[in-house]
Length: 111
Image 1 (cartoon, helix red, strand yellow):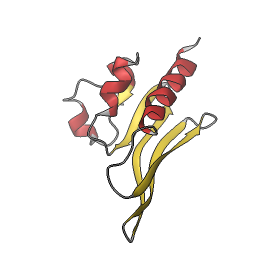
Image 2 (cartoon, rainbow, N blue to C red):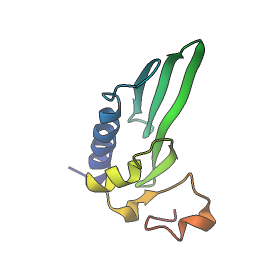
Image 3 (cartoon, rainbow, N blue to C red):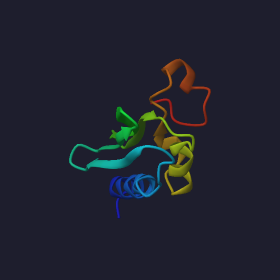
């Protein structure tokens, strides 16, 4: 299998695990949104918490020029670590939610 398809499979597998985790409060669920054609992957928390509507991006990942760009990670689990453990090297992961000036001090790719 080529690298791009391997990365797609890993991202989908890691994100799919989040959809199985129950929420402690509210009538909430985690929805996976996968677009392999455009290499965009997202998780959304949707539902109701008491009388408040919840529609919140949990994770957003794009694959750009062969690298995995984590656009948002609103979890307490660090999705980048999970992607590395699943087989994507740190050199192919960009923490896009960090400014370019800060990225050079991380163990991950700058761009």
